[in-house]
Image (tube, rainbow, N blue to C red; front, side):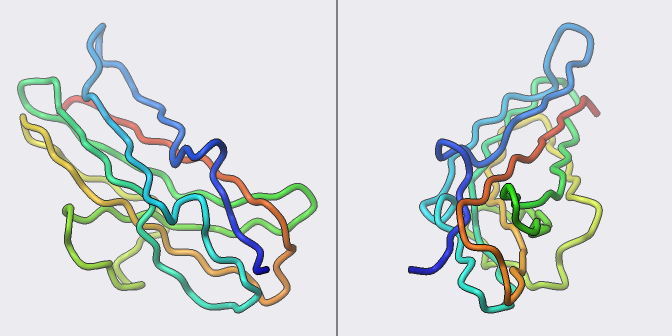
Length: 145
């Protein structure tokens, strides 16, 4: 059986939202995909791009909001971390290319409406990746425009 990565309790992202005054900039709902809890870590140092979630973001301010999702690492006690980069595309759009990802996370704007997007990660395990269960969390930050 190939090693796999998993997010704790089926959760994709640990949400961190910044409040503006006493009102949150957005309401964010996370819907993990089936592959989220079963990322391949099969010892092949192959670059992988995987859809991990759909986010539904409803801006609460009159001018919308800006959303930032950080990059991170899949980690395991006693194992080498596997860095990942995050990218958001419109819901139903094709998977992004490897060159579309950026090292600093992903930032995008939401107008005064609700928007649903697909979240992808890009990662590459090493050929000698330690087998076992890996976990990760990620932050989503939303601020008023």
